[in-house]
Length: 301
Image (cartoon, one colour):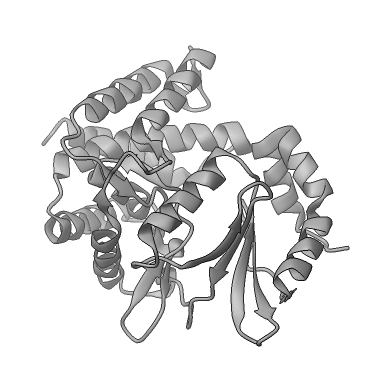
């Protein structure tokens, strides 16, 4: 019987409710099926958040990574994104079972996370190279969510919380929803985006090469895909200055519209804070405080 961390168990139950409970109940059976089907032996998992992810050794002694998640739309979107990226600046997909939520992925080595770099400007330039390689024009064959789906998610939160949610007022919710609508209607050329690209989802694969992992898969504006990166690995003090420096680098390297970055930053920070409150009954301070930061810049540019 494999013992899962309590925090991970509570996250699965909180986010996925009954489906999460059922998945946890059959988890050990799922591990056994993976070991038998792919002739692998699991090693201790990586730090767990929303999915079970662990390295495993094949019969030929080569290592792979096994990712187990709750089957459904988000899992299917990740698989679709992995197939479209096909290893270009992205971890390679080896095998998949959509019905059981199983991914067999290549093991990236040395596997150092971008979060380990002390030089934030250097890290931002590396991230920009990965982003440039990942972003490809969207097509009808991409079975992933869109930024309009995220707009609808925020509208649903507004309907269910007409007086606001947590520290977010109804006025802020309404303004963020209107911002989502305006941005989505003005996208000139939609791209396939990573959807959750930040310092912990960019991994070193060589002396000067890096690749992304854990794509959510999202069709939308390129400016939207930089927001998660902007909001991660922020210091307790002078965090606004770090965001500004990152925006300067990303806008220059990727030819992005700064105003749209600030608008997406405002809209997404509101949505991300709402998600945290809904799923965990708390929220990241950096996400919450960035709401006002992005909104102030929206009105000054």
